[in-house]
Every structure is written in structure tokens, then in C-alpha cells.
Image 1: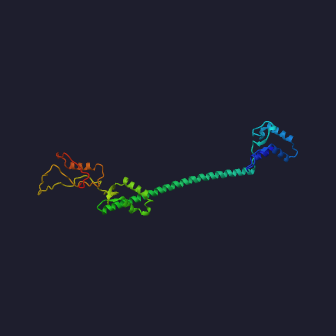
Image 2: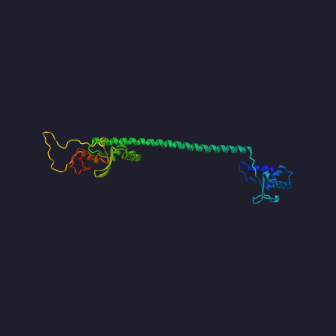
Image 3: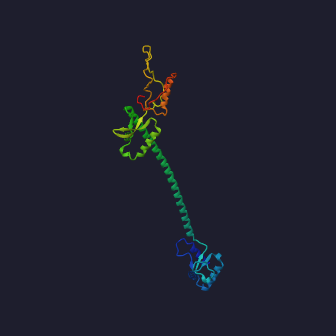
Length: 287
């Protein structure tokens, strides 16, 4: 019983110990310290009992660390059952609770960091969207104002950039500027992107298109000849007729605007079977 309790204490010790097992010599010395009447013969008899009763929780090993079947081969003894002291159990419980607290704290910190990270990203994205809209509004106002005050209805993109973004912010806001340029190209019908030569250099420019010009109807705007009583109609000395001021090529952006003009003329000339050919010069400045 003394050997069993001693080995169980060694196996369940919380602190670092030289070994969890006892040699046969150490075990005999331990028994003699506890009871000086113990002899080597008594010790051998105890080993025989331990070999015959493995359920007592003491294993016997030879010099190679393998279980042995003879008392003469026993080199070390070890416990198969563990007995821990109260302080050891208390310490292990404390470490177990502390480990769970650390794990839960790490999980909570990770989830909290993810939540605040997503919240910050959404707020940042919304802020960038508002900055984009503000920049687009400034660009639109500048292009419109320039078209109203100058004969040429276009202005270079780089000039507009220099007016709305300070030099110290141009590198930092370069990506925002490109987003605004792309937004205008895709979503703003009043501004058209072109390429113009300014003082010998090619620039991308924005041309302002009046909002009402694209929505106007294709109607006849007046008489081609004065037909009053005092002014008889004069014969046309040609088989061809040229009509001007039917459109402005700078503001026409509908896909079939030339066909609309032809239809308007044909509608006005309904009943005249002498029309054999009609063409709209889409690049003419005279309309």
C-alpha cells in the first residue's frame, strides 16, 4: 500500500520531478525508511504480490522498460493509476479556467475587431461616395458655366481638375478624380468627352450639351419661299434643294437623329412624288 500511494503521487505530481517511476532499489530504501523492519525478502514477496495483482495499480518493468513477469527481472516500478494532491487539482482547475478565459477573450476580440472593421469600411465607402458626388457636381457646374460664358462649349479635363483640386491634394485624390471622370462618361448626358488640340497639344475635353436640345421635336420651322400676294413664287433653277438650319451637329446625340430629320421633311412634302433622293450631311455646321 505504501508503494502504491507513493507511485501514484509521483505519477500525479504537478511539478517537474526527475522521474515518474521508482527503481527497485529506491523503492526498497523508501520502504525501509517508513518501516526499518522491512527486509529484502519481504520486498521480493511484495513484488510477487504486485505481479499477481495488476489491478492494484502498480506496473513492474525490466531494464528495457518492458513489463516483466519475474521479481528478479524488476528494474523499475510505476503507477498505472494517478493520485493528485488537493493543491495540484486546484492549480490544474485554475489553469483550465484561465485557458478558457483567454480563448473566449481572443474570440470576443476577433469578433469585435471584425465588427468594427466592417463598420469602418462601410462608413469609409459611404464617405467616398459622397465625395464622388460632390466632385461630380463641381465639375458639372464648371463645364456648364464655361459653356455659358465662352463661345467654345468645351473645356479641358486637366483644367477642370486644377480648378477643383488643390495641388497638394492631387496625388492623394487621383483615384477619386478618375472615378469622377468615369462616372461622368457613363451617367451624365449633358457632358460629352472629346479630344481637341489646344496650342498644338491634344487634350481630352468636356463639351456641354444644352439639356433641351436633345429632346426637341423634328418639326418644320418655316416656309422655304415667300408666297404672299405681292411676291409670287419664283421657280427653282435646279433639280436639287438644300435646306439649312435643321439641326446642330454639336448637340445631336440620339442614334437615329438623321432619320428623324428626313422623316420631318418627307412629312412636310407629303404628296410630292418628285423626291427621288435625300441625304442629311451629319457633319455640316450649317445644319
